[in-house]
Amino acid sequence: MPEHVIVGAGSIGSNVARLLAERGEASRIITRSGSGPEHELVERVAADASDPVRLTELTRGAKAVYHCANPPSYTTWQRLLPPLQTAMITAAKANDAVLALTGSLYAYGPQPDGRMNEQTPMSATTRKGRLRRQMWEQALAADIRAVEVRGSDYIGKDAASLYSMLIEPALKKGSAAWITGHLDMPHTFTVNVDMAKALVTLATDERAWGRAWHVPSPPPVTIRDLARRYAAAAGRPPVKLIQLPRFVMRTLGPVVPMAREMAEMDYQWYAPFHMDATETATTFGLTATDLDTAIRDQVSELRGEPARHAKQL
Image (cartoon, rainbow, N blue to C red; front, side, top):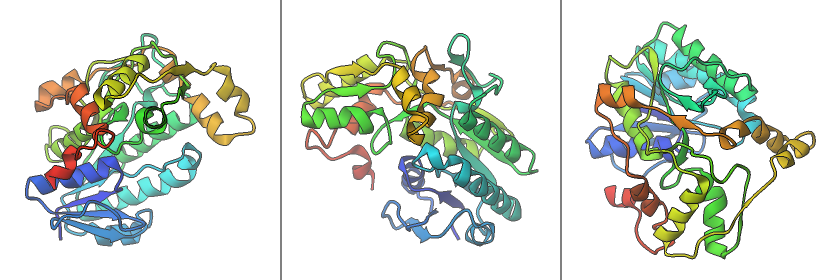
């Protein structure tokens, strides 16, 4: 039985599995479809991780369980995340395993100066922010060894991101990108590989348990600067960015559920959004991947080059 069990095979879960494989450690990755990286040290299992009985069986003997699953649509969070969280806690408790949670900054809510560190109170008022806070509080109250690793919006190969959803299609088509956010507000972006490194490091270090930590990330950049860097790295002409009026998503909200969910969180994109991870970096010696290094890897396919993680396996 592998000592590491990962739930979710998105860019975070897959990178956790790859990182462990690089270290010679076996892992089991659980998804509904049985997907995940192909490697002799990665066992892929198709199962419903929100079933606490089945998940407890699949995590038998594990030392660490990594919660890397996230529903792709905001509209399903309230329905899908609570039972998954409960099953993860049940399995970790039954097997005396550390539960490592992939977290976000949603639980903090808007901050007066746009800055968040590991000691910022969780004061979210949005539905998704309150849900994230409740999930972490549930883990803390469960009498298990738990740690939550919080990152900002992702960049990096295979990440569901501003790049994959808006900038990459524009680069491929030579068209404009319509942006639902201020183009010139500094914003922290977290490299997905750095999130994976932080999860693996903190799950196995008892100093981390019982609290939340931030992923060391590159200095904040604006959307305009980020798009410019992507175009330069891809060897493509700069993308024309068109900033949608903020009222658009709010106007669509009553009839388009996804627009309503996006409008609820748009405070992150219309004011400075800085994540400070100094305490994490100092305590565990973790550092951020250089922003342009992550960008070059993310646009490698546009340049006809192999991606960095493909070389790793």
